[in-house]
Length: 147
Image: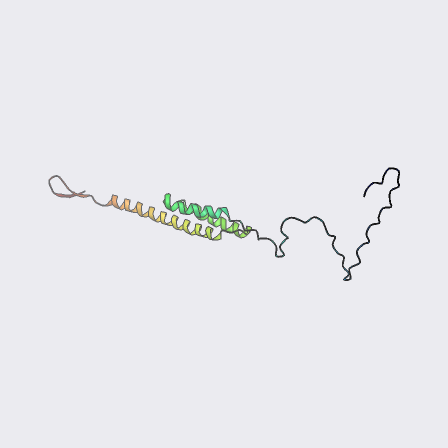
C-alpha cells in the first residue's frame, strides 16, 4: 500500500478476500503453511527396534573360563562357571542377550576345573607312588642293590 500525497485522504482499504467455500465432503481442510517441515516424514511402520543389551557377566564368564584353561591350569574355571550361572539368571530376569555365551562359560569353566582337579590328583598320586617304590640301583661294585 502506498501513502497518499501530502494533504489528500487515504483511499478506503480493500476488504479481505472471502473465505473458501465449505468442503462438500464434510471435513475441514488443514490450513496450508508457507513453511515446509524439514526431515523425512515418519514411517507408517515405526522406527527400528532397539537392540537388546548383551549381558556383560556372560562375556566375562566366557573370557575367564577360556583364560583359566590357557594360563591358569583350569582352577579359575570355577569362577567362570559361577559367573555364567549368575549371568543366565540375569538374562532371564532383565530380557538381555548373551545366553549362549553364559552357557559356554559354564561348560568350559566346569570342564577346565574338572580337568585341573583330575590332573592334580594324578600328579599327587604319581608323586606318592614314586616315593613309595623301592629304589634299586647298581652300586660301585656292579651289584644290583635295592633299598
